[in-house]
Image (cartoon, rainbow, N blue to C red):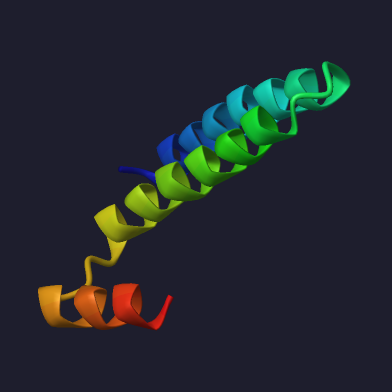
Length: 66
């Protein structure tokens, strides 16, 4: 993935998720807004892992710490 492709993917994720979050907040749906924030974090984490995958042992340690 080139730098330009990465930038486009980040923009796509952010635009879609922020739009959904904004709509949910305007409609007073806090739980949906929070779910959208979690979904954006998950998508960004998957994208980051594609560039710097962590060994399974480190990922398990991180999950236990949370």
